Amino acid sequence: MFKIMMIEDDHVLFEEVRERLSQWSYEVCGVSDFGQVLQEFAACRPHLVIIDIQLPKYDGFHWCRMIRAHSKVPILFLSSRDHPTDMVMSMQLGADDFIQKPFHFDVLIAKIQAVLRRAYNYGNEQSAFRTWRGASVESAKNKVSAEEGTVLLTRNEMFILDFLLERRNAIVGREELIAALWNSEQFVSDNTLTVNVNRLRKKLDDIGLGQYIETKVGQGYMATEEAEA
Image 1 (tube, helix red, strand yellow):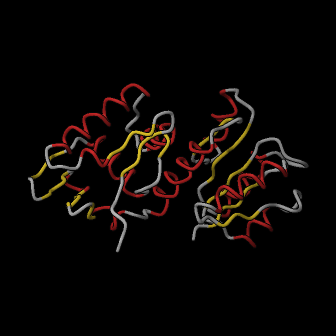
Image 2: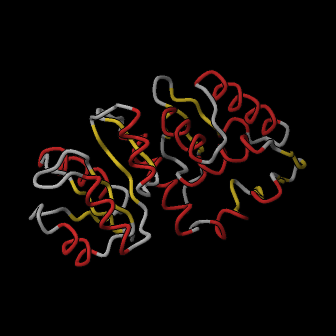
């Protein structure tokens, strides 16, 4: 289980984010004394830090600088401040990403997953080869093989399929997919996401799998899997 430290003085927001992240099996710790953040960081020992800029006593930039002096832990800023200098400052201090409030939770979780993936290189072994409805999915080769044959996917199509298969039988929001693609340096717009998904589905149709990538109108997409007996 990954542990996330959230340095946020808005108690309502903190509790909301903690509850939502717990549904994704993340453990979240907060701050009780904003004058002792570094000590609480050491006690929490998080895998990732989410930090606001405007905080009591010292701002988020100060604590980012202090944490960076002791640790390479990934840091993600979450702030209502939207001036470019704030974003530049956060990156110069060693932050890994910046999200502006108000935010969509799907975007937050996608960025958290992307930052953790880059920092800890998790998921690579299990996603390199997997099975789905009797087919073999080889991410490293951008290839899906079934009894009906084999199809080769583009990098974006393979990324989308992998992302959906990580959460099979669950709806993945369009915003979450776009954010994940952006964080993997494969940015697509809303329109081109639709094009990529349609191309992916058409290729999978050739081996009898296209119908199992479902569109959930107004929500996103879902890769379905047969329930285990």
